[in-house]
Amino acid sequence: MTHIVFSSGSAQTLKKVLQEDNSSEAQLVTLEDNLSYGYLQLDDNQDNLNRSYYYQEIVCNQVEHGSYETVQHDQEKIQQLQQLLDEDKTAELCIWVAQNKRDIIGYLALISKLTNCAGRLHLVFLYDLPFLNDKQALFYPTQLDEIPTREFLKAKKLARIISESEKEMDIEKWQLVVKENALLRDIQPGGHSLKKVISLPEDSYDKIILQFTPGECTVKVSKLIHTVLQQASAKNVAPFYLFWRIKKMVSQDLLTKQNGAWQDEWKIIEVQKRIL
Image (cartoon, rainbow, N blue to C red; front, side):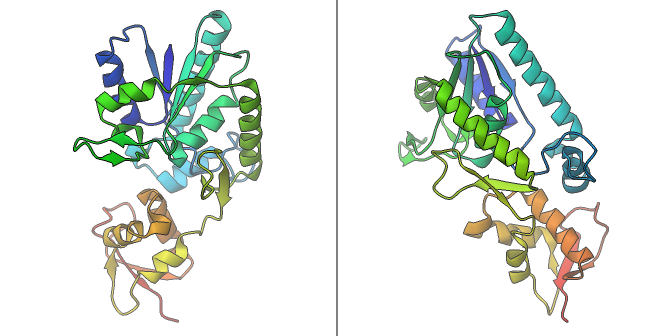
């Protein structure tokens, strides 16, 4: 069995679980391109409406969030998975998906690229499932690496075969997402169980940023981002995306920047709301 996850944190946890479960023959593949953000087109024929724009302009050399090479590596891994399915008719894949947009969107993208695999794709979908934490209290994890190892072994037993009808519906969902080709995506409220992805305007969090940016004095960008992330409507957005929006808002004369260049640490740069 080849297991597939969508972040390095999930991979580290699952690797440990497979070792403790004596799954010596199990293989682990990590797809690390976070498809919650950035245009989805891979070619350069659409005036920056492509995947490379996301890494060049938004991630902007923050290596911990990957580079355009991440896209290329993921494509190679998916090709290798397809080759495995084609060459070994007994090969099976198990896709692990937690209750978060990165995993769900990554799953939809992957499932749309795999063919000739009826009955050989398994899904562990941890939607709205309670687990016991280290204090023996119930909790609902949103990330795979939040689950204690002993509970992870229970989760492994939840794997089910993805039916052809489910696969077809999920492919249709992904095709719509690709067609919309937005810069920002999330899961529709209440839509985690149905894997419903929604495309969002790129300025979706600008009002919150403005709300917590003072006009009478400056605020450090690091503190501003931290404050925005405390708000319920923005708690799931990546800090680097908020940083990119702050840069855009400065270029749009909604904010003014003080101290340091954009490539400096966030704790050095300060911004202030522009008073008209």
